[in-house]
Length: 123
View 1 (cartoon, rainbow, N blue to C red):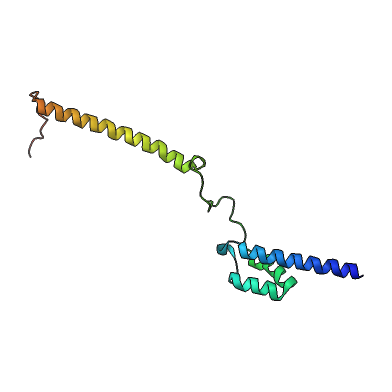
View 2 (view 1 turned 120 degrees about the horizontal axis):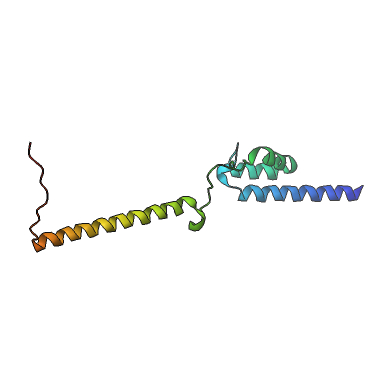
């Protein structure tokens, strides 16, 4: 019988310590019902009951699978970023082409090729 009591006490201490550490390092944005420091105090004052309440009530759930991840992704893992790179490259190419056309038009105007730009009729 004394062995069982010792085993239960050790298990209660381990459960309480695990709950305090879990609460201390848990994401503050996902803690429910009470502030984090109150949960730690509750776990320490009511070891088994406080720890059980922490795991049952205080610990918020993970975000849903379809929700956007809160952690940042590496650029090569972020599909949105990779898609934006393709669009940016195409846009840069269009800008470069337009700049070349404008430079050609300026060169033609400076040389005086005799070509006049088309004018709109008034009216």
